Length: 124
Image 1 (tube, rainbow, N blue to C red):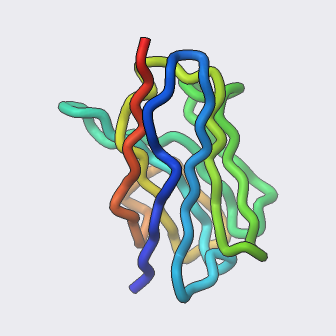
Image 2 (image 1 turned 90 degrees about the vertical axis):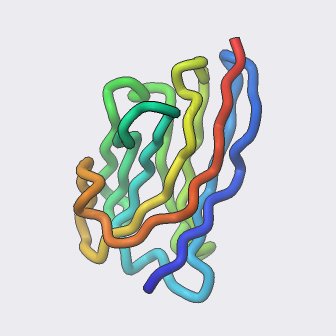
């Protein structure tokens, strides 16, 4: 079992920035392809961004492309999601996910481990 812990959520005004982070205490994130998903109240969980195990390949939802950047620092055992130009519609709980493969995917059911989520709220 892999425990994932997210941090860095909060309240920000529209147009602002936040960076959320994901760590795996006691495990090495370098073993996993990683993804970020989000879920707003009353909506299904949706893909946001993903990165391959080595970090060569990234994927983004069209709604965040050009505004969000996923990265990983395997030496620090962390994965990040830098969110710029935030919009009220980005308000959601953001979840980190890991899959025990080299390649990432945009499909949440293909991920093996999940964090508890961190809330991001963007005010207008």
